[in-house]
Length: 412
Image: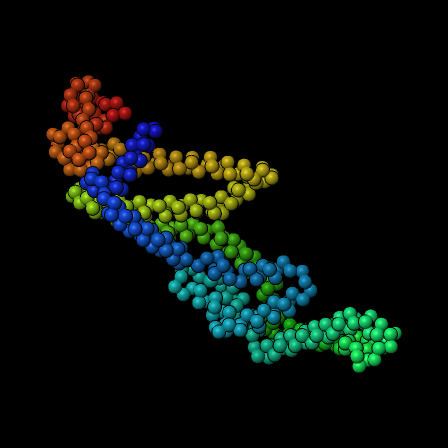
């Protein structure tokens, strides 16, 4: 097994550094490496772009985060808070939340949730000049309340100082404090009365805004548990499938490139075009690298693996480091299974040998040779082996002798 692996690695590196079994010079090797880097960067750029082709869960259900946050809030004024965002969110140049949601579909696959489109339309209905004026009035009163409360804090902090100045007989004109000691309580009472009036006016304005028909319709949608459940289920389902969709499009981007590079490489080997064979081999390797990387990335972040991780975490308690051991054991096993599958069904050596013998090619390097050649003039590989029954030469790796037809050992 180790000998076969070592031979495969040697053959791999030999193919990346030779043209017609002759080593590349240093300048050519540097040029090949630079080309590899350039192509690899563009491949990853293309993978990133095509992975964004389909709408992600946040774009398909853009209303879910805000809706979910509203459901979790326990504050008494959460209705006004979310209605207020309907007025604040539309200060952008586009001016319409519905249009922003719909624009996400342009140039992408997938559709925005109809419930979220209704949600955006309901928010847009609130964004009217009269409602904006009410919101501005509420903000102005809040600022006035803040200034009055700040003034009260200043008066309280200076009260002790003004009282000492009065006891000491200091002239009021020389005091650094804004309010005299005997006026402090009176000023505090006046400010508190204004604050109470402003708060009452603020409550009235908030109720006036919430009583608007457009606000009532929007809040009714927010409180519709059936609609929210529909959005929540859709968002979770979209989050589950989105990594698989991304991997599908990334594979759709890479597989034609891999197929073209493989066909060009085989054609170049058959015709003896060494430089084309070398470049197509490098391209083949470059295209396989991001595909392998994306597959492992998919396995690492996929929701299924996250579900398994959660189960293991529950079973192991706080010993989460043991999960790493499971990953370390699981990934090589999966890799071993993939390798065995390709070795047995895709890159089966007996199938390759059969095809090469039929095409008069070397069993190992696939270069064109004559039928009577016992050794490949390109790589020196021995093409024949002795039959254990008739002791004549027959092709290596084929199941039967070409002279007597007796079965040959499987290790040949």
